[in-house]
Image (cartoon, rainbow, N blue to C red; front, top):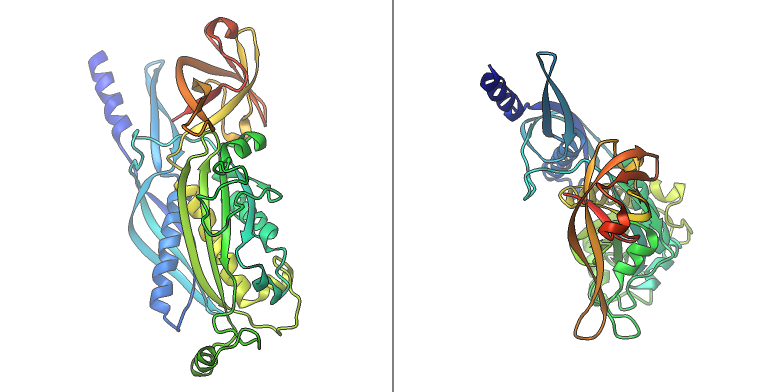
Amino acid sequence: MKIWILLATALFSSITYAQVIRADGQAIIYNQDISDARYRATQQAIKQASLQASAQVRSVDSLTNGSLGSSTSIQSASQAQDVKIISEQVIDDLLTLTIEADITPESMCDNGSVNPYRKSVGITGFALQTPQQATLGALHNIGRELPKSLADAINQQGYLHALSATNISVYPDLINAPTSANNDGTLTDVARIGEDLGVQYVISGVIRDIGELYPKHPNQKTPLNSLLSWANKEDDQRKFILDIYLYDGFSGALIFQHRYDEIGKWDTKETNKIGFGSAQFWQLHYGKVVAQVLKDMSIDASDDLSCQPFVANIFRTESNRVYLNAGALAGIKKGDQFQVFRRYEIFDQLQNAQTQLNNANINVTITQVQPNFAIGELAVEARILNVQQQDVVIAW
């Protein structure tokens, strides 16, 4: 009987179920190519459906009073099948559609699972590579307002917790970003920024180009641009090229980078001082293009970090208790377990400090949870195990 129950439990746990999920996607229509826009919008919607469904299902089965029960947690990682477009509309060169897809659990991470915790991300200021380009439309505030808008878009997705730190400038040398150097010759110290902000990951970026596609101002005009402007009748087109970089906030290592390259119509008078992020700005075709890029960025950031570990700082120790700088808002629950990692500083050949995390082979079990912090218990007192402030806990 016991063997049969164990076999039934194992079989029940291995079953995966497809979920029918609805999700929206959007894409800008270029050169009246609706098929291309439909494809890009569908791809965005599929990625959104995967995150929305958080489709890896982990079942924890138990036998209680002779009954087989199951508690299920939903996590990200999935495969989409039988995708159907159930509605579609086009407004001002923006195609919006809704899909319905079967989302099947399928682990995409090396360790076979995805942890369910909400990771924290700090977003720094985004420097404009050519500041003169901000003159058209008075977009001089783009370096701080754009990352703020990105933080809002990420938080709307709900998979990450984004904090704005747009007063921080990461790259003194924009041309060579992200491998720029500080004034003292050392590489950009993203690990210090992550520690100061108290976040697990850091997003920075460089706005490469917001100039006109075919400049029509007297000091920018060339015979070739004049000819192209006349031939294409697109002299109100404006570029939006942006690089973003995702860093591990503890080691400073660059995890991912993306480039977004779009074009939108600057359909307002040249003399209008719109300002980035204003109500007028978002009504422009160019503003709608930027809004679409921000949505893509928020989805990509969530997707990129879905398989990264969840890390929280230990900010206090007391007897056998440790206090973590993450709590219920990050999805931590009573009974969760984490591994303790010790933080060390090592020095490279240039004597620059680097952060190293070593597994201490110590487990922490969460006993109390507050919105912004949690309390965990060790098997013995923290001083005996040499668990200290600034050590971290990790869930893979």
